[in-house]
Image (tube, rainbow over all chains, first blue to last red; front, side):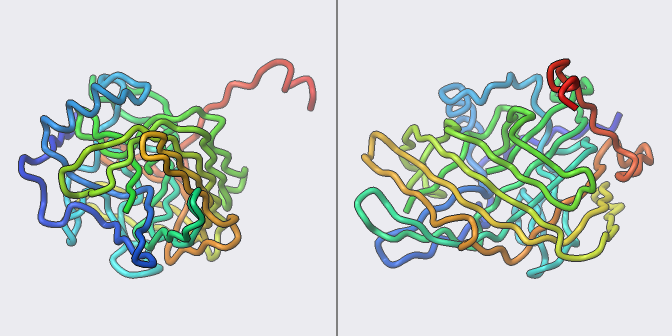
Length: 143
Length: 152
């Protein structure tokens, strides 16, 4: 089976995120997006912040960068559907993607902070091949 | 700045995590979906993408997709994926709390948010694409509790 394991590249990438943070000068907020961290850091973080699944149960990420050097694929133009919406590879099932959300909200001390067009949420539900090489069922979100 | 996500997994999967099936509801026609997760454990990485301390945080979110156009099929043989999906309007509301920073934030209601681009549908990629599986033929299994079944 042509499984693809795609480790995080040491040193990261020139453009580590598709998120853009805009605000009122006081700051902004974001949830959902893409990044690259060094493998050591990623491993340490994963150990400290378990997500509820062992690595063997987890799927593979999409194994290549898009033209903007993002690991999570994004639309080539606003409104375009010509991109890979899933965040996991060797997958079949339902998929939803909202990679360009924007809005605003209030902090607990009364400030207005914005979330910007890089705010990216998605879902994947169906069959996938896990890191262990087994076929599994699962529901995932990208935040 | 605040940036909320989950850690990258050892497999390289980034900012993607398993959630309970009940968190996602896709309508039977596949033209709308609601994703709702409450009190998800995440991290706040305020100086992302620069290396910086991270803080434990919780996030709740509700994202709604509504198809806004006709069904489209697109694929990329070089990248081994095929999608049958609808262009959509997506809206979001979410809230976060970072106890260590005494920081909390809550978005305005769902209706006030906007999206420049969104879609929902079905996809095959990687191995399943190579096997010639059609996205429209993908069946999502469901196991219904007896009590729910009797109620219908």
